[in-house]
Each structure stands twice: as C-alpha cells, then as structure tokens.
Image 1 (cartoon, rainbow, N blue to C red):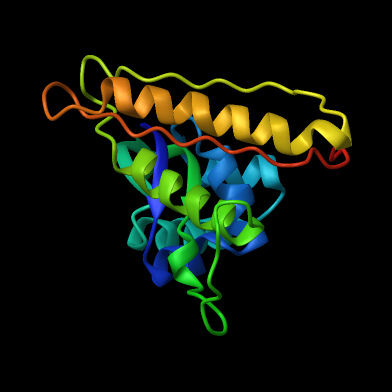
Image 2: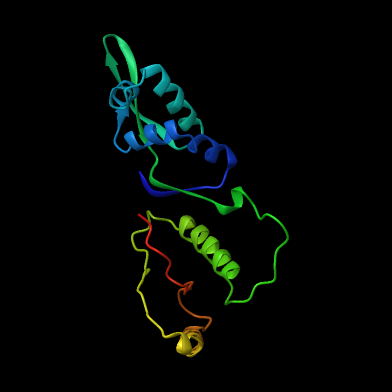
Length: 185
C-alpha cells in the first residue's frame, strides 16, 4: 500500500468523490471482503460490491486475495494508498491567468500545486529519500513585516548562490510564508 496516491484522472476523482465510496475506502485500509465492510457500514454486500467495483476500476482499490465461504468465492480487497491527493489540474484554471508576483496569494497557490505534484511523483520505494519538512510560526510586528520578508528572501538567495552549482544531487526548495488564519476544527 502506498502512502499517497496522486489522482490526476477525472475518472478517479469521480469514483472517489462519493460519500458512500469514501466510507467503503476507509474500511479497506485493511484487507476486507465486501461482506465484512457491509456489516460495519450497515449496508448490503451487493451495494458495497457495487462501490468496490467502481473503486477497483479507478485503480483506488485492488483485490488482494480470494477465499471460499460456503462454496462461494469471495474477494478480499484493500485500498491502494493511505491517502489520496486530487490534482488541482482536474478542475483546471478558471478565468484568465493573472500576472502574479512572489508576494501574491496566487503565486503561493501555484507553488503549492507544483510542490504537490513533485512530492506525488517521488518514488517512495527508493531506499533513501533525503528530504526535510520544517514548519513553524513566526510573529512579526506589522511595521517590521517588510524587513522580515526581505531578510528571509536574502537568506534564501544566499543558500541558492552557495549551493546552486551544476554538480551533485538536485533538490527543490519551496518556502511558503503566509498569514496564519483561524484554526480549523
């Protein structure tokens, strides 16, 4: 089972974005039969099988084994990933592209879409994926905001200059700095 499955085909999104299928998919985090899932969800096995079949067709679930139950073959299914990311490209851009500078929210959204696609494309079976994720909160007084942003930009440009040669492993560095909104519950 993969950690993340990046969905970039409309058929996959359509198969996933039905509440009943999400419930079935959650139950298939561990290998289970349609009958077992139906019992947990208080549905008929036929109804669950219908949803499982659609999820299999979309590549979100796979049959991992088969067993005999009272002389009938019963499939055992499992989700293909622990989480699913929908590509922003599934919707596409609505309206004309607005010129964006690096201090705009639109630029940040574009950057996050790019990072999402890059991370999804990584080979998670590789023995070593040298990466780092850092998150934190910084509080800046409004009158020092521009000073902070300038210092951050200068520090990053120094790193790009120091390590930006043509030799060695290539790493992508994306830094997002945005106002912290209200916590979601």
